[in-house]
Length: 420
Image 1 (spheres, rainbow, N blue to C red):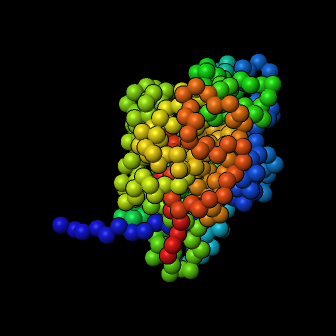
Image 2 (image 1 turned 30 degrees about the horizontal axis):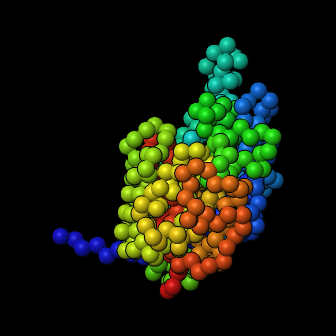
Image 3 (image 1 turned 60 degrees about the vertical axis):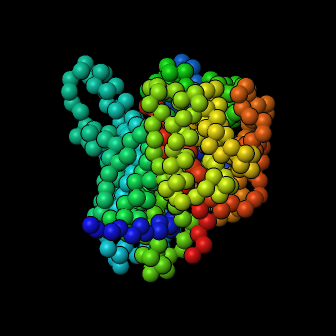
C-alpha cells in the first residue's frame, strides 16, 4: 500500500479588490481603520427596490488590467478574478518560465457566476419579442467555472482546474480543496479564491424577496452591524480575493516570500434548512472541530476567529453558540471579529478576502474590528471579545475563518504564523 507524506502548504501571494480597497495593502489598512464600504447603489436605479444601497467597488479601472476586446468576453465576476489573480501571481514573485506549469493549478469559486450577463441577456431576449438572438459569449460569460479557465489560459497553468460552488462558503471550499491537493502532492502551486459580481437588479431583488438584506436606507454606512440589537440583514458586496497556496519545499527552493501557512480545513453541512443556519450551530461547530483536528491543533491554540457573521438576526446568534459550545472557557480568550461590517457580504468571494484578512492579522498581530455594533442583541453573549469599534493588538499564532452558505454548507479554514 502506498504511503503518503503530507506536505506543508504556505501562502506566497495574495490579491484583493474589495469595497474598501482595490489591492491587498489598501484593503488591509482600511480594514484596520474600521472603514465602511457601504453607500447608495450606482450600478442601476434602485428607486423601486426595498434596498437601495450596497458595498460597491470604487474607482476600479478594468481597462488598466484587461484589454477591452477580452473584457467584453467576460462577466464582471471573471473580470474581478483576472484582476486579483494578476496581483497574487505578481505578489508571489514566481517566474512562470522556471516552474512546472503542469503542477500549477487554479481552483476558483463563485456562488452565482455570471449574474449580470444572465440578467442582461434575458432582458434583451424579452425586448426582442423573444426572438432567440443571443450573444455568442452568453454561455462562456455565464458559467461559474469560466473564471478558473480564463486565469489558466492567461498564465498557461495546466494543472488542476475547476470551480467550487457552495453558496457563501464557496471560496473557503476552494481554499480547502487547494490545500488538500497540494499537501497530497497533486500540485505544487494553486491560485485559489473567489469572485462575485452580484450587485444587479436580480441580485438585489432576489435577496430582498428572501428578506435577507438590510433595508437601512437612511443610514447605509452603518447598516452592516453584526451582533447588534438593530441588525436587520446583510449588505450586498462585490469583489474578489486570490491566494497563492504553495508546497513549502517548492516555495523555499525558489526563494519565495512566505506570508503565512494554511494548516487545516474542513467542510460540513447543517442538514437543516434551505437558507437558515442550524439554530444551535451544530454544523458550524462540527466544521470548526474538524478543521482543528485536521491541523493537529487544540481549542486553546486558537487566538482569532474571523466570523461569518453577516448581520442577520438568526445567523449571528447560531455562530456564537457554536463557538461557545466548541471552545468552552477558552472562548472568552479568543478575539472574534465580523469584517463584513466593513466589506459587506461578498457571497462566494467572502471567504477569500476574509482568508487574506486572517493572514494579514497573523502577520501584523492585529485583530481587525467589528464596526457599527453599539448594543448587543438578544442571544449575543456578553462574555465574548467581539473586537468592537477598533482593531486590537495581540499575538496571533492561529486564526480560523468561518464561512457558511445557503443549503447548510460550512467551510472553515485554519491559518498559522509561519515559523520556518
